[in-house]
Image (cartoon, rainbow, N blue to C red; front, top):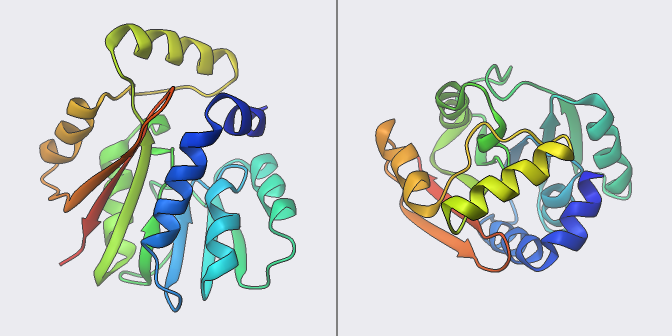
Length: 191
């Protein structure tokens, strides 16, 4: 069901944000993707880059992503919890957590893990759906909850910025793919 939402409800935004994220990654980067879901970002990143480790906590969804990416030899799939990543400090050049931070019970712990496993000089890239208004937020969250996607936080652009500021993260820039339900990528450069 999630794949259907990706393609039909918000397809233009998803294609735009996936392309933007892919353009943020260099061809020889080692990439960690957390919360890969059905592989929406994985398949685009795997087409162009050195190595990608795509993780998700849900085994059924992870198998769907593996099937979608079966033609790529540079991608490894693993079950992993974004709040307890079993990778060494500074293991990856780029870390992507696409459309997942608003679903996590402890986003502050997840953020700490994403930063921890990113190399100095690397980037943590966090695309997240944002709502245009409070009314849109309520309707969209209700719709996604029916589909089994349980938003813990329904961000708008301002609350998304405040989310990072409240934890002391310096976001170097934001990119927003606008349409029905915008998606905003926050880029944090690890110093």
